Image 1 (cartoon, helix red, strand yellow):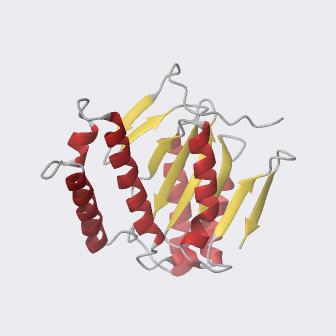
Image 2 (tube, one colour):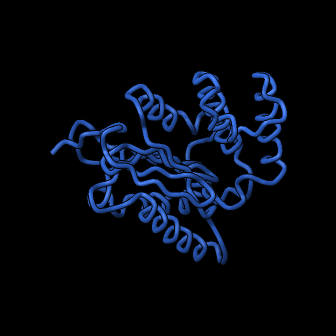
Length: 229
């Protein structure tokens, strides 16, 4: 049976939650998820990211204001708000692609532990469209099935893969940053963009064969295939 990939439906219920980040869950809608390692964004890189955002705000005439305030302000032009939101997100992911930290997932054996955890409940609790495991983070396009929530499932994925990798490298303590980033796919164009983004991520980060794991759903047979490079 073919998997049908769905985008955000404004007429369907959304589960909203928040810890350090806001989260929207909609069963049956494609979601872009980023998991990153605990040391992937050093303090100086976070500071640089904030400086970049402040400069962008100044270019739009919002010097001295917080980006969260601008994004929540309905009096600000919607195109401007979308530009700022997109800039904030893309610069964050750009810094991730610079591969800061120890980058243990550069080692194929460790990266495959993440892939194994992601695939464990594929076609049971959720459907994976594709993912890439990078040296210090992973990007995933996933669609949850009824009765399961993205928050709980990815908490388990991060917990089990983190424990397995710590055991392999002889370490203890937090492996992943405690909370993943997620974004419900809102249009077909955005879906295509994110598919290409995940596929291109290793080449943009100038990774060589064996330094990442890429996997995608096999559309032709509706069975999954993986390619490790």
